[in-house]
Amino acid sequence: MPNYLPPFTLSNKTLSLVAQISESIGRLTVQQEQEKLLRLRKVNRMRTVQGSLAIEGSTLTQQQITAILDGKRIIAPPKEVQEAHNAISTYETIPQWQPTNSEHLLAAHLLMMKGLVEDAGMYRQEGVGVMSGEQVVHMAPQADRVPKLMTDLLEWLETSDVHPLVASCVFHYEFEFIHPFSDGNGRMGRLWQTLILSKWHEVFINIPVESMVYQHQDDYYLAIRKSTQQTDSAPFIEFMLQMIFDAITEVKTSKNEGLNAGLSEGLKLSDVDKVILALIEQDRYVTNAQLAEKSGKSQSTIERRIKVLKDAGFITRIGAKKTGYWQVNSPHLISNNR
Image (cartoon, rainbow, N blue to C red; front, top):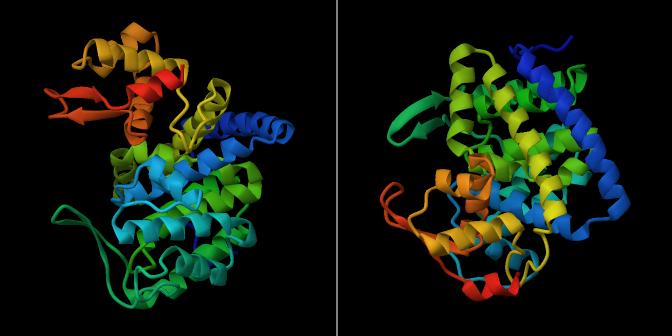
């Protein structure tokens, strides 16, 4: 019996999502084994790295991350370039680690934060708080408690018979609550959840859950806060399972729509992307709701594709969210993708 049992409850929604994800990931695994989707894996690695770093404030676009993956130089803040190189190296090393090994966790942090913090690869020695603006929203446990708390959490992960989908979410939340490092806790928590999931199904190494979390960043932090307030990680479990399911669904859809070709030359546009860009060219003040209505797609799909097109540099938002308008930046790329 482990020394610590994280408090969490399983809702009907959680159980339903576990079943849906299990079914979807099984089909996706067979599909990837049959088709050897090398380009898909590259695109999703780019999206994983870009999404996880963007949550932490990085301004690097998907095209810039792709260039770094291709060994090209980019013009960007040196710190952000270092963060990207570190994250790429860390995710590439995932297959070598065991999620319950504390030495592997510290080695991963050393790789992720190399050249960024002095205590990379070590648990923090000082108190830390999680800020929202100027307000402290969470005071992490005292530094001298961190080694024991992490030992207990890793022991629970090793001995728990909870489904890996749920266990990975519980670990992620508890990790963020402990905040074991002076910096890099967010990206390490997301990395370690991916590692846990990859030991259940290897295909998770190539599913950009981090990118989906970035698209719902406010909800991510809200789920953490709700779980802390309730002393029950159920809200966070539900949120992350939904992100995992959505990421799997998007990977399958992206593969079918051919969104992953032409990385170095620009994002390959799907039919939905082409419709969105055409509608924006007709009316630069068009809203997401209008785009959804005119394209026959859901508003959530439109919001996801707008985010991808924006990150890829095809469109730019000019002015405020409500009163501003869209500008199409690369009509030559659009025509080349037709």
